[in-house]
Image (tube, rainbow, N blue to C red):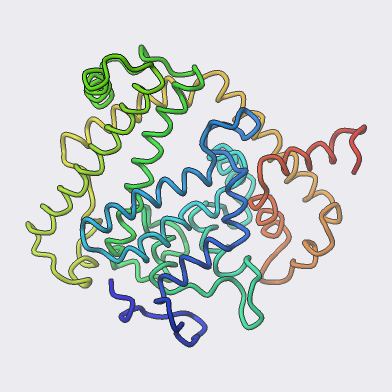
Amino acid sequence: MRSADSRGREFPEPEHDFRLCFERDRDRIIHSQAFRRLEYKTQVFVNSEGDYYRTRLTHTMETAQITRTIARALGLNGHLAEAVALAHDLGHTPFGHAGEHVLADLMATHGGFEHNGHSLRLVEVLEECYADFKGLNLTYEVREGIVKHSTRYDRPRVADFRPEEAPLLEAQIVDFADEIAYNCHDVDDGIQSGLLTLGDLSGLALWETHFRAAKAAHPNAGFSVLRYQAVRRLLDFLVRDLIGNIETRIDELGVETVADVRAVKPRLVEFTSDTKIEVAKLKARLMKRFYQHQRVRRMGAKARRVMSGLFEAYMEDPHQLPAHVVSRADGDRPMPRVIADYIAGMTDRFALAEYAKLYDPYEKV
């Protein structure tokens, strides 16, 4: 996708002297409040569990790095791809997917909640940086990529971005860079935490192949080095498999233009068939042995209590919210949506502190 062929911004702006439109979008995302808050939002472990584990911010950075590598190898627009990658999780709630599921349930009768849709809402409405318009006024292509980079097209806002068109390749690769990042770093974090053992990964070809290769290459290395090297090799293998298969698919389908990309549904991007099977096995094992671990489930249960408690308290008496938040409610933005926007923007530690102020009689309000 060439910058010069962008469908533009909702509010026209003069072009910058030094940066192309997608570069400006990337920079606006990095400088946004929502991006900074990702530092204290859960990936798997709540921030208070330790300094080693990935946060939503470090996950986003790893996703963006993988995205840049894939985009460069395929000759895609790296600035566009990186912008979509950096924005793909802006809309996540505190406490990761557990928090998102709770907020989705709480908002089921008020228009729903879904983090990709909320990411779009953040860059279009909620970020307050410019005098002439709300949001960040990103290009059509970046906003489309935020809401359409995955294959789920049942989100209401997809209708605003030509749902008959497949996403650009620059957006499609973000979905897989995201998956590669979390599969690899969740193995790393799981082992580091002690919640995941080598026995838990036994029989998984994707892991065992690369762990054996790491041991063969570094026979005298300690376990920390072997773990890192195995994860590194796994990540590299998945990226190479994806790039090679995309190139094969492009050749087989005769894809030469952006219009050709948009005509292939549901998408061009996929692992090879064998790797797709092995990735599914790895994800299933992580779900069973890591994400369902007692400690992770307890963190999820705590998240549900905190998120539900905040929502219920604010719904019962909205004036417990800061005055500037209450003032946002109007005909287009009813109070439940204002409350959801406010809670979704919280970091883990702010949500926990706010919950204590609302429910702990000894906590200063």
